Image (cartoon, rainbow, N blue to C red; front, side):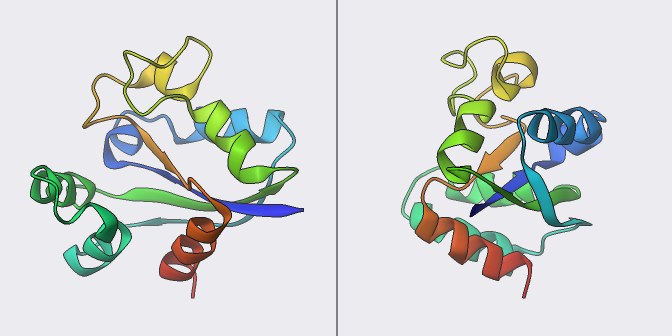
Length: 132
C-alpha cells in the first residue's frame, strides 16, 4: 500500500470542513495512518513550499498557510497519491469538477482548502516534514 500526505489548509479548518474532508477519504478506502492539528511556523511553511520560492506569490502563500491551524494527515491506500489527488480536484477551483473537495468547497486558487502530495517522492518528503 502507498502513502500520501494531505493537509487541510487554514480556510478549510476555519470553515469546519475537516470532518467532511476526512470522511471523503475514508469512504474511498483510505486509512489514516497519522494525523494532527497544528499551527505552521514560517520555517516549516517555507520548507514545504520551497519549490515555489521564486514565484511572485510565494510570500502571500506562506502568509496564508501560517494564518491559522492546518490538519495534516498521512493517508494509506491503493495508488494513494493519484487517488487522493482525484478526490481533491484541480488546484484552481474553477477547473475542479463538482464532487471533488475543491469543486465543492474551494473559493479561489489561493484559498483552495486542501493540499495533496503530487508524487510519491514529495509525499515521502512532506510526511518527513510534518511527522518526524
